[in-house]
Amino acid sequence: MADDAQKAKAPFNISEVQVLRVSRLMQDMSQTEGWKEYEKILQAQIADRLRILAQPLHTLPNDLGLDFLGRAAQLESVKGAIIAWELARTIPNATMKHAADIRREHKEPDDAA
Image (cartoon, rainbow, N blue to C red; front, side, top):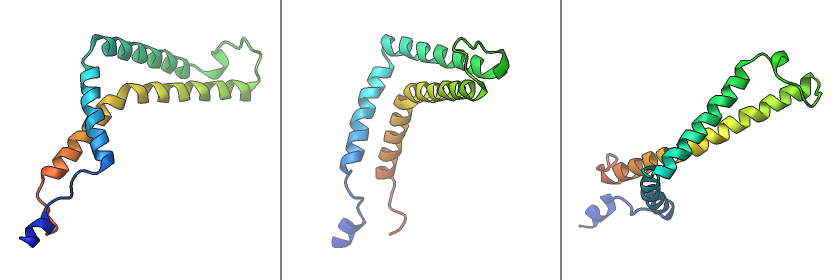
């Protein structure tokens, strides 16, 4: 019987429990009308900024009178915004996938034994 106890999977650790709890909340949240509208706003912001990045640098407005390096830095800021909005948009699905992986890991038999 001691061998059976050693073969058993370790219980969920605290961070896994948090992921599972947050995943449940995110799943509920992602099904609300508010989240769906928020996601549309994020997607529109991303699409808008991608259009900016697709233009040649010299064709973009230069209201601030920046030199080439300043304008290039502005585009890096645009890239950062795109990354942040995409991250905000994908966190719920990534969290739910992580929770599914945790559940599957704890259901699978231990192959090492």
